[in-house]
Amino acid sequence: MQKSAAHIETVCVHAGHAPDAATAAISPPIHLSTTFERGPDGSYPKGFSYTRAANPNRMQLESCLAALEGGSEALAFSSGVAAAMTVFQALKPGDHVICSQDAYHGIQRLLRDVLRPWQLQVSFVDTVDTGAVHKALTPATKLIWVETPSNPLLRITDMGAIAEVAQRAQVLTVCDNTFATPVLQRPFDHGMDLIMHSATKYLGGHSDVAGGAIVTRTSNAFSERLRLLQSEAGAVPSPFDCWLILRGAATLHLRIRAQADNAARIARFLVAHKAVDQVFYPGLESHPGHALASRQMCGFGAMLSFTLRGGQDAAMRSVAKVKLFTRATSLGGVESLIEHRASMEGPDTRTPTNLVRVSVGVEHADDLIADLGQALAAA
Ligand code: PLP
Figure 1 (cartoon, rainbow, N blue to C red):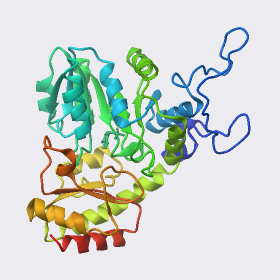
Figure 2 (figure 1 turned 180 degrees about the vertical axis):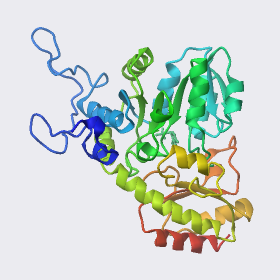
Figure 3 (figure 1 turned 90 degrees about the vertical axis):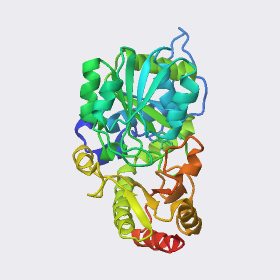
């Protein structure tokens, strides 16, 4: 069977996972060697010279990620923000970037505090409003950065509409697909040019490895530039990090669907709870992006957030009372996490102070609901 014709479940298990050619080991060996022997004629007989330029474990991970997203090539990095940084560094000082105004706060901080001083022009725009994106275009605009569903309000941007605007203006588009994963959302099918991941989240899936990735729809001058920056700027993941993310990817489809099922049940429980003001989960019919998410995604993911009627104090009190959920930032692991988001994001946050963000894990939904129920009694 052609790999490209395989279903996503099969791709998760098999892409980048061939038995080791030297030993027939099913689990890939971890290649710690930083350097590789040259032939007498000065050639590199296996194609590897130095680990920063290329490493067998990184190549396996990259071929898996490219297959998962249906892209031409993937580039792995030491973290999600390192992947994002590489995309921005591939632009030139003076270029203009439009970024979702509710993209992950770390990406916004990177643009504001690191790349603006480097003379990148940046506009934070409500990308849910395609007209606002159109209006924000300038002759210098080179890239539109979209995060959908967004963090932490789970707002849904219409990727097809943004891609149309971008194509007319000859501007590149990037989708941060961290929340949805390639199992639930296919940004290339909606015209996006690049996909970014924090592999620290669902791809790794066990809260034990940091990583990032860029997947390109086509190989071109821009992807060549990304490849150059990957090896010359050097924000590459270790061989063991690559091995862990590749292992995580094999069960991605099972985890994200189980987690999304749990999240849907928790969202419905929260909607009916008297201490809760609003629930932000695109699977709810009341969510303003529900219809679009139903068209654009094939599942609504496992991230949700909610606000408390009792304000910030009630949010803090409830989070303090959880027993099964773990109070921690990040997301995408098998364990459920909960956090008071605004205090984590810091003083420049736009997040409502009474908002609680939840990353739903693979535990039994009844146990998670019981824990939230007893914690919300404190609200
Ligand atoms: N994108 C999203 C949606 C995230 O949630 C995060 C981290 O939380 C990142 C990017 C950055 O990834 P990393 O922490 O791996 O650098």
